[in-house]
Image (cartoon, rainbow, N blue to C red; front, top):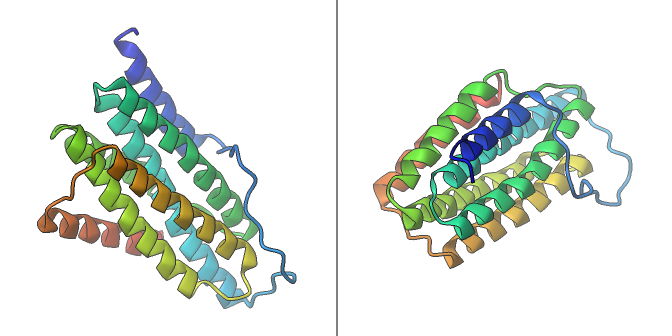
Length: 208
């Protein structure tokens, strides 16, 4: 492999995530139900929550791309790349749902991507087990965050709820896969710092 190939792949991933129309390999989940009818304020609330979820998927692409770039283990690199491909489904689903709700992605997506990419590179410097542990904790926190959104989304927003439910299931699988691959439990201060950073991101992305 040419030494530049991983760098070019990382740059390509960033450009596709931030500027190209995302495409999914799986059908967007749907739940058979009555036609979705929401009041304007409910639609705005659903859109804000889905914008936050879209930001989370932008960050997931950055995180997995950075870790795939940094690891020297080819098996682990393929695992990170596979997870990124699966997360691209979420990116496409949330992007499309935002359009359906008449809203837009976060204006700060380049900033979120850069921050998550940097965190992925830093985690990778401590070795593959720490890098995997970072994935485990990230996905656990995302799973909790998605559960909160299921509780906050309008009950009649069947489409958004179906998407979030599938995302939650996939994130749990990614956490389990990283744990099985050798991920370690991170120290409590690191977990708390991750929660604080996520809180800043989600609160800001709710509006911007």
